[in-house]
Image (cartoon, rainbow, N blue to C red; front, side, top):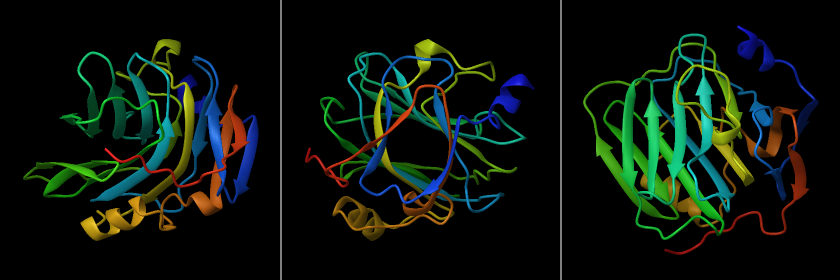
Length: 223
């Protein structure tokens, strides 16, 4: 209950166009994160999340967390860099690990993930990784979206599992984007999500998270 209440305690309340801006997470922390307020409520039977990020961390770290009143980890993105270079996509109780054909994420990386009733799909810099499924992954309950923190259980956030680095261009849709849509995103097209819109972002900042200018808002590193 305490953790859930902390989601609604803000240090900074924002609602602004974040183009050419980023969120910087300068240090490990159990209390620093950004809560993003979506423009649509659930349930969602399919969705897509896109973002751009970089980090110098060599340990595992979170990229995106969506919790609801029904489950504390409705959607989780977690990257394991050094041990096996895997990305974890968790949707409800389904966990899928993707072996990535990329050397590291020390440079800016573009990432999109989507899920529907037929597939879980990850895109890293235009490289597609797909897992076919046979059941719906409906997200039930109003979403609480967090970047900068993740969890491997429903306990409180841990410093050792926090994100350190920079994140920009976070968008989310209530549909699974097509391959053509993905290519538009990676080709630097300005696309606005209807759940999260980076150009009209509603958010709270807690702890030591900074908003900084971003000279190149659409980096795309070729594999």
